[in-house]
Length: 261
Image 1 (spheres, rainbow, N blue to C red):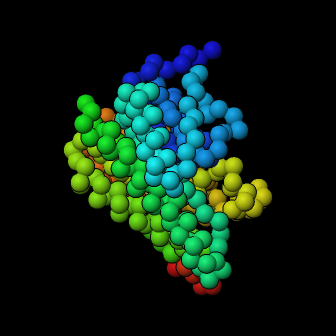
Image 2: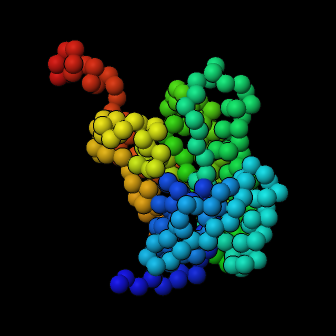
Image 3: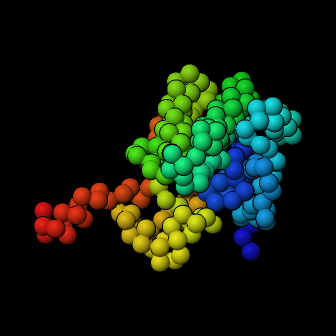
């Protein structure tokens, strides 16, 4: 039986940490010995746990600033400090711009950008004066670095999130470091909804130079690194965690139509 890791004395909050990428990030911090609080509107179907340790769940609607502040007040009161905030909560349905009213698109931006700003401000108030400062991590997306048809508001929000992180890194240095994980496709519980059945997922995976989708726990290991002392001089940075990105379509078209270029 593997014993639980020795506590490292740190406390991390992972928004949207009850499933998918967020749960993978929470598990990685648990394995590192960090006390983890995961928050979302609804509790997880089963506790988020790893290496004999379990994350604490606190409910919150991240689109309600008063509720967000209350959450961080509770974390401070119960744990005495906050070392890491991972702004992971987000997502969007597939919807072309002209297929929805502005209010629906604004809700996507609210969840994927404004909520992260609200949570970061609340976390900064705790981190700025404590010994050792703190670290804020944004979970971005390649959708914020290229056209994002069908998820335009999401892509715009993720682009804004990355820029926000760079500005925070300048304004909040040196006490608080702020970085972004820029993710490609990840194999989560919702992968089938995005990419289809197993054949569809496999076909999508073949478009990634690495030949597969990322696993949530791999994203978690990258997050743990950026929050660690090994990354003490890294702030205002964007770490691409996308398996090499996307093979340009013109390369395959050129090969098909004209042979090897």
